[in-house]
Image (cartoon, rainbow, N blue to C red; front, side, top):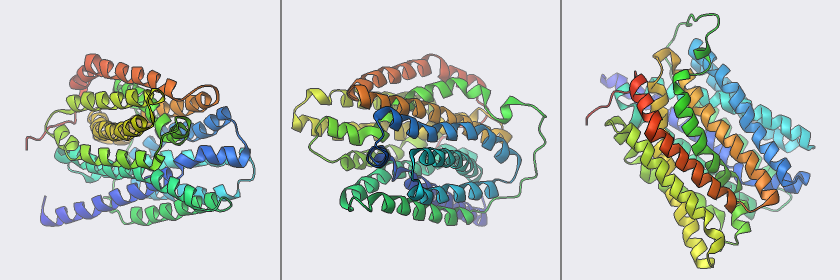
Length: 407
């Protein structure tokens, strides 16, 4: 690249990462308190909480294939910024939801806008990053996402525990709104090249979904189920197991694990170790879930140590596989299928997350969450075995965009 191109790339990439961080931070700041909010405000039981939280994921999953078609066919930036603006507005609307039915409608709208926004964000950054540095570029871009994923809940828990009961939820939703508005401002600063409209067949499944990504999608779905339970119910699990430290420590350690893994994972993907990175990362995450399942059988000091260690290990595991899986899906599609590839990647994750959130709500009603971590450990082991035995070979056969750079 020329100096001017290098400068343009840096500016666009920074704004991509900044808007992505703010988008996800605003999203994850409300994640740990929503279950409590529904129980306290609408007196919802565990099954109802699971349903309401899963509506968001279902809506995001439904909109992703259509968003992929739009963003592969028409200019990307207007679609991205518009969806992000809708996403921001819904946060403010939460404060006016007087019934559980209204809240469900708002969660569905929020899911639709989030699904469209994340497709736009992930596709635009793929356009910005040079192909030979894609693994590293997506790794650091994903770091902005994962830092928000880890730090947002810390902020949400801190606000919840420090604010008066009558204002805590209004404040949290208002803070989320302000952060997402800043994301809109950052996104508007991204410069994208003009792309003429793409002519496509009248009916074509790959307009909406990357067929060659199905095996990897199944793997990712399995890996997301227990992860979603952890992110949404760790606050309740900490209370259930009477751990002597706050859940905020869990999210802090996750952030450390994610940051540590990003130092090497993206570069390892670019050097040709994509399959190996996914297997190692998934195996590490599996061990973290096994540790969480042991908490009810430990004393107070042992619980605290394992609780923190599992967060650190889980952060390392998922921080490793996120950029690798993103690179894998993009490499399976043509340049005009980047939206479809991103949609398949995110939809696979969302389906698993939806299953985990819904089942987690039912589990909190009838049994201990620790029982789900035993199941989750087995699901992850299945994903690792499937990837090693089949998916990695499928990827090697159909890969058309993964060109390792020996550096």
